[in-house]
Length: 249
Length: 295
Image 1 (cartoon, each protein chain N blue to C red):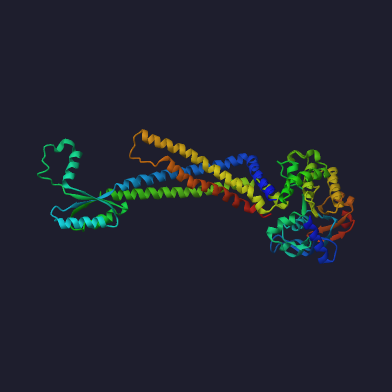
Image 2: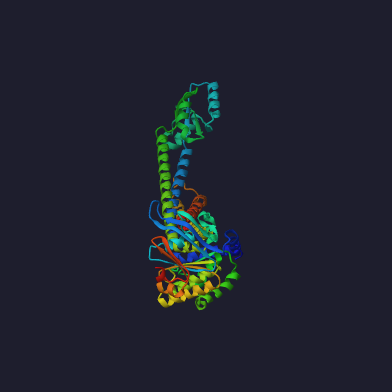
């Protein structure tokens, strides 16, 4: 955690702005040379502690944008800064250290299904070298936050979709990341469970964690009234504070 | 970090082996079957080599001495043969000794024949060479020496023996090379299948910030253990198969099949198969993972 605060301090000094979480400047992305733009001339700045929705129809570039932020992809042009560092220049061996500061939640949960909820969350902590004592102390707390303290020993494949997404959330927050990225976190869930998951994300955000959610769930976006960035055919066509899906659209 | 990381890696290796036990049994089985076949060929090749070496050791040149040669010529001939760089051993056999051998070979057929009065057999030098394959060239050279009547080395038979053993060894080596290459392909593909079944797990590890080495270690250890088990099983099987073969050869009094001792052969096999099995396991895991680590 000391590392994150140092990064954030540096961020303030360098930019003269408040804490830079993600900043894109004239960023473009093409999957193939000469192919069409998946993202074109994207510019935005996300501050520390913000809750941001990326909305748009399928193929608009939401998932590509999130993949760029975790450096699963590199921008073809322009710059993309995460924690005020241009991550397109980040050497491959430094990638794990970037990802340790970003919690990720996916539509398909991406959990190790044969393992228990506890094991899945513990894994994220083992990777960063947390001690057994620390893990034993932290995991019940984290599972408690997502309402799964009773299911710690249950295998993920025996849990419902909503519960699996909660495990995924618990894993994302286990290492107290500065940023959480969620790609269609409610895509596989019924409306009630989807709302529960989004409420959990909001409560995590209220503790200071920056949240970025890619979604086309209109109801959720309209209900939460957070900042909304609207993507259409790879272009950023709208950026509204306390926006609603319909307005931006 | 190190202890918890090491404990984790070791634990993950064992858990991984248990969770994917059927796949692991399959991989080990493939490694074991391939190495067993390779081992059988090695056993055959080692023994063919040993038997032909034994036969070759018995190949010798017999230099018959001209009965008209004087003492000086004979001592010069003895010196030249003894000092020849490719000669391992020179033994003088008198004409009387030849006659005794002949009498032994023919049984009582020469009974009553006075060998002391009229012995037509020539005295000779029996020569063992350092390199048996050189007998033909050496025999030709010895024919030019003074005091030599004729030179005999089993003309025709020796050339055939060397040709056959050369072919046998080359065929054995070609089969072993072919089998080794097949084993490498089959084993690495089987391990690739094991890794592919767990590609989702690897991708998750990458997303939560695991370093490539953190992900690799359990797979490498798994590959090592699978390869080791896959090598030890055929060695144990070959030990019993070979022991049975040696006992059978002895029981059937097949003395011409001079097989190598069991312990010696098994040590030779282990020296080759254990590093090959474990190496293949580790390399198979390493190469199979490359694609999945680029997330």
